[in-house]
Amino acid sequence: MQVPIYHRSYRHLSTQPADIGKGVLFGLLPGVVILLGASVILPFHGRWVVALLEWMRIPVTPRMSYYGRLLIVVPDVPSFAPAHSVYPAVVAIAGWIVGLVLLMPLSRLTPLRVIGGVASLVSGVSGTFFYFAGERFPYTALDFANVWIRAEFVVWLIIPALLAIILGTLPLDPGITLLYSAMTLLYAYWFSAIRLTLFLAFLHYAGLIWLPCIYFLGGFLLDFLYIVSYYAMAVSRTTRILRQRREVWRW
Image (cartoon, rainbow, N blue to C red; front, side):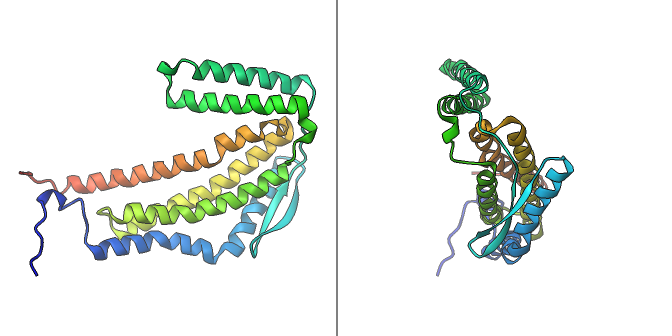
């Protein structure tokens, strides 16, 4: 069977199947560690947040819950739902005005304006709801923390799989793929605990009126940003590797 002849431009853009397999396997290892140690990692995450909130002198109660068969520790802080007062009225008016100002000039839209405008509109909708029916808001800070921990655990499982598939096909040493996958996962773990701590503290002092905006700005959006950042670092490393193999290309 004749071996197909590929254009020389593919020489450094593709890797051997065995190398791709090694890269994907090494990239998946941190995810396997998360799965095997989930019974310890998940409760530690919740206890870490509880310890940080206690250090900040915020009253917190650890609640035990289960994610399937996995035990999770969910921090619960007292919060309030402002209703029929000036506070939600100001938030509603300011949110609608700022959102419309940022989004109305369509010719001047930028990513920051879109994100800021949508966040302002979310705050405006939240303020409107709390002004007219704040006592009927069905969620608490405990519900927020419970959903947060479960969603972040899914993100921790997606990160190694995503980076393994993306970085495994690049001309990187499998150890480098493992390093970037592990670094991203470790960053996701501690950053998740820090964000949850700060958000619960904010909800304790500012009220549940900000819960939708917090989840919109500080949830999956920030997860996406740091994942893309670590991917960019890996691509930059790949570029430096390819620069060491320069050659004159001809058609």
